[in-house]
Each structure stands twice: as structure tokens, then as C-alpha cells.
Length: 485
Image (spheres, rainbow, N blue to C red):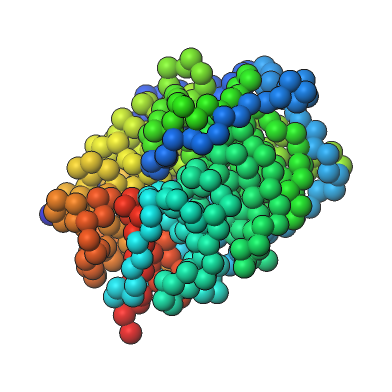
């Protein structure tokens, strides 16, 4: 049953948004704030399942000598390149795993109110993330099966344009990142690679661990953190290092025999289990991390400082995400707040500049993925076991549930789009599900489409420039729903 709360006046310092349904925890009882004496970072999470790692890796003795571990102060690494640059590298479509640098899971074009199934594809192995798209008719998805694991599809038909067997099985833990020239960037546990739009390999760079998707920096470089906790920044055109690999833990290694199931929930065995968010206005980036030996995961902020000798600066850490987190941090449109969920059933809001906890709101379940956040501040958490579909607004010092439908079991990422639309997937039976179109102002269902087969659960709904909605499933199926004409 859909419940909508009654309006309540905002406090003087609150942002003008909506109504109340549940009171948030106070900041003092939420995440514990810690400034940055040490940087042996901790993490947590992601909603992906991963196959067993394919190749063992570790830093060579020659390279170890060149890598400084993080020191008690805001430690600085010098980048070899010189000039400060500003380069909006992101492609025009859904070019990153969570749409953009902020991890918003929000599409800026008006979303359709009525959908119809356009095509379906089934692949060998699993799909763990939503596809990315170039906005010009090509869709890119990764799978875990044998043979080709990177696929370029025709948006209109779903047919394969090209595919690559160059990448390993762990490519399934990332979605291809697309730049404005149409080039792709994808890591697989042994290397980060770049491809052109026709599938030609442009360059390959060896890495330690598996990145959970990459981002671009304000200067247009390629930036990512591997699951074992190593930061890389590469020139996206050449694959050359902008900085030496930056380890967040002593002597990071990659042992395939350990597997990576812990990355599904952001547990200690997978220290860096999410995609970082980056603020393109100032170079500050945010990532979850579960430091070895620590009792809880946390979220950290560092900054890429431009100049004749660009450098990384550690800024703050907030060291308490109960139970870990399956949520990549989500940066607000104004860059002032961060949102993410923990595995014990709360949504957290943090000050993006200081890392201090602002509020925490119990949502009643451990969310299995990242939140969707509109520029106006509407937050729809990802689903989970027995998860109701609900929407939350940030009212300054507290989060407020503005509508909730307990009759709907949300089990995916409820991606939002302009025009007050969201596209959650909900359970309808034993393994079956529907895709909904929802008016985010009220929670009203505008359209309901059956997802073919038995998807078990969906792994990241994304939108294309023409309004096509892509729904991937853990079983290796990809369904494209078009706007009804």
C-alpha cells in the first residue's frame, strides 16, 4: 500500500523540500567522524557478484621501493605531468556505470512515462552491472562467460556490432567507461585497457586487483581504485601513468584463490568494493574502504591537486559504516553532501567538505546497491531483501521519507530521470519481476512492464539518450524497453 506523509515545516536551515515519515538519527549517533591522521583506508561494497579471480598479482620488489605507504599526515604524491588542465572527458550518453562522475544514477533528459519491450538478449555467464551507452546508438555491456566478455550492441535491435575476448572474466565487475571521443576504458583484474568505438585495442596497462569501474578526473585523465586498494591515474589517450600506483594498504596482493564474493557486500576481504565519486569542480574524490583489521568500513576523501606538479592530498576519513556497504558514494548536485547506505539498514548523509555525519535514516533493510539521486535532492535507495519502494528527501539536518509503498518489493537500482520519473524493478513472484515507471513526486505507478523470464534480480537499470530503458539481470539477460509511441 502506498503511503504519503503529511507536510511538515522545515527547520530554518533546512533545504526546502517535502514531508515527514520517519525521523533520522542524530549526527552524533550516526557515523563517527575521524580526521585524517592515518590513511590505511577502509571500504565496503558493491552489489555485484564476482567470479573467482583469474590471476595472482603483487608489486615487484623493484616497484615496492618506489611506493610510499600512506603517512599520518595528508600525504602528497607528485604526478609526473605538469600543466593543470580542465577537460570534461565524459561522453554524451550514459557514459559511466552510475551515469556520471557523481554516481547519481540519474538521467538528465525527460524520461518516458509509457514503455514497451523492444528486444531481449541472453549471454553466456552473468551480467553484474547496467550497460553504458554512447548516446549515438551503441550500448556496451560486460559478461562473465567464455569467449567474448565485452559486447557492443546496436541500440535499435540488440544485435552484436562487435565483441572482444581480450578482457578476462573479472571485466564483469566493471561497466565500460566512455569518453567524448567514443573510446572505452575497462579493467579486468590484470589490466586496464582502452578500446576505440570499433573494438580496436588502443593500449593496455597492468594493474593489481580489479577496479569496480573507472571515472575521469577534472583534467580528463583516467582514474580508478582496485578492489585490493590501489589508486591509479593514467593518461586516457596513451595509458601512461600520471602518478605512480598509490597503495592504500601495505604490500597489496591479488590472490585468485581467495575469490571475491565479499565484494558483493563490501566486506573486509574486499577493501575497496565500490566505484568512487569525483567532484569535477575541485578534484576531490570519495570512496569506501575497509582497512585491514578495522571493525567497520568507512568512507574517505582525497583530492587531485592541479598545478605544475599535480599531486594527491588526503583530506578526511569517516570510519564507521556498520556492517560494510554495498553502495558507491553519491555526490549531490551542488557538491556539498554525500549519500550512501550501510549493510545494517541506514542511509547516511555526510558533509562532502569535512566528512562529518549530518544525519542517518533507518530504512529497514540492507540495501544491495547505490542510491539514485536527483538534482533536486530526491533519494531512492536501491532494493534488497524485503525492501519497500520508498523515496527520501534531505531536509537539512534530517532525512525524510516522503512516500513509501510497502506492497512493492524493490530489488534493483531505481534509476531516476528528469520529468519526475523513476524506473524501479519489483518482485512479482518466485524469481519473476516487473519494471515500473513511477512518478517520483507521489510514488504513483504510471506503467508496469513484465521483465521476461525469471531474472532472480536486476543489476543496474540505465537509460539511453532516446529514452530506452535497459534492464540487465544476474542471469546474463539484457532487456531493452522503448518509449511507447
